[in-house]
Image (cartoon, rainbow, N blue to C red; front, side, top):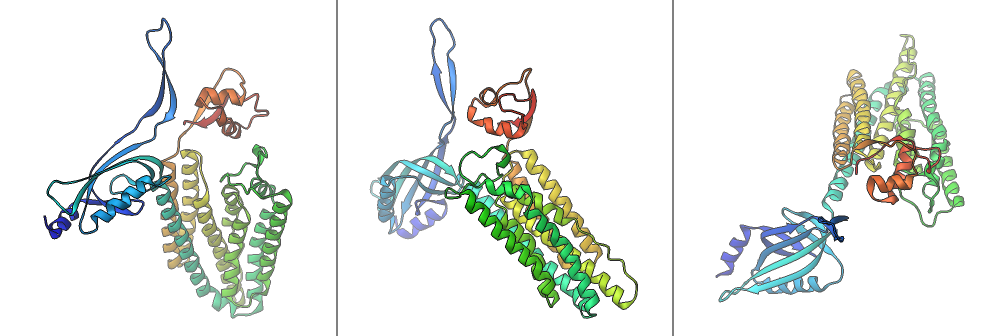
Length: 433
């Protein structure tokens, strides 16, 4: 068999790789199930099967190597099989997984050179496809948020430049409108919710009232370092808000307005708290009714443009927070999807009525990306169900009863919010799995 015909044959099959070594996939199979421990007892006809969790998924792949480099590829796969730890498997139908190569077999065909048949047996360690999909969706949300900021700035400048040129009365009114909105951000960063989110980064069990949404802790964090960092972020935000009054052009004012909600979001480590402090910033409609005289019309135009930009800046930051937020149930993800979609729809309608076509298109595109991201995560999460008991039981007992896992008690405590974990309410919400 010639190398040219071998290359043509390889092109008819799908390609795969393990630890970066490519091979041709001919067929594959797999095995999945649960780990079961079977217990037999005297004088009992049926055994008791104890569930020990999901069994690791086993994949068997058959394929071949061909061409002038097939022998080098065989040796590389042999080295991969003998290497310690799992590796990355890229398969045309299985996807991208991190797997341990349990065995690697190869065989040269009788009387044929330049082709080697192979068989791999791999045990899945981690499925990376869902994380890659989420990373792609997060990147799309970030890109759409930036595009919306650019469009909103462009539409703002188109209206603000003429009103700005009228003089001090309109400029002062526009800066005052932005300062009133920014005062809400200054108040939010000093709220107990933000302080609790900062405490959530401390290592150890700090109680359910300081539990964050993302569950990320900093091993080296201390109370002093946390408060010092929060104080620095607060001072930075205050300085940014003060700079609103020193801006000299509409572009400078727009830059500061767009930076304020992002600074607030970055100052809060917990995405759930980010959403709670950013959502009020999306509702801002100061009174812009003035006289029809040139100065009054300029003031009205600038106030309306500033308030619209403030709301859109907050929406861009909320989109970023949604990408980082980790819902625990499909109901939570769906509720946030509907809430954010309604906010984006409302602002898109306002932009369309105001003739801000670029912002309208950007808001619609951002809505698609955010809702798609939240819908994809909702589809992979358990539902929230109502658990009812006829007596107040400890959380550890309920964790064992409901999930056969007492370590799930903290989640039950967080959802039920009991007076004391030893006396859970008789009816509360919990995850179905």
